[in-house]
Length: 361
Image (cartoon, rainbow, N blue to C red):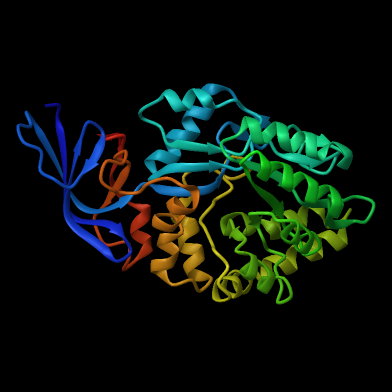
């Protein structure tokens, strides 16, 4: 028999299911003590399934795609922070080589962003017009891992403010095409205007969602549309607003309003039953490894600590269709020195990070 890892203490299989130990044999989780192990390594503490960052960009920085060495450093930084499952919410880089690395996080890709011409960050997206939206959504649905990423709104320089990027009819056709191909669709949305059309067109998720209001929150709840608030990114809005104030004062004032009500927006969505998940938006202007900080932000917004923890652990994995610490699952887990259910700040100090059954950090 191969070497065995023994995790002792409190194994948080689910928010209400706790076991005293688990074993890792052949890189897989087992709750039965294996007979005949040659050598056993024991790790003690509070174990969680590997954390989820549901909005992250490996292979991307503020200027566009990066080389493989930089992408590797990004992935390692996330791993060492305990993030072992990433939904890569748009990247122009080909990071499929990461799938062959036993020591790096697992990635669910959304292909490359799809944006309106000159309505997004340079070098990030396919920049197209509405007539081509269905074609490009189909292309990225085939290229990704079950997700497609739209840019739903961005600054319109003629209007001097955030406006919706896509006409309703084209959005409906594009989302229908993604669903036909078995992919879910998400969209970057800072402001209010695009949200109703996207949700009524059948979208599955909205990134940032800072423009949610009392009019649209019930629609999200009714349709079961998830949000990934990326509050660590929304925290940058005042700086962005200051930088654009001279040229786009309406946009700057709008960004400040969205920032000022960010916690109320997230709490209202949660209270209404909208699914909320953890995402950091790392890889653009933000560094990697911020998952613990984002969980803390959700708690500051008023989400109960256990639910904020679930949004990066059990519920997030279920939403993305990936196993947690279940019998026979890949042994991707993080061990902490204290109970993160009692204080989510424990997430910032992992004792051990285990990927595919091996202690990596």
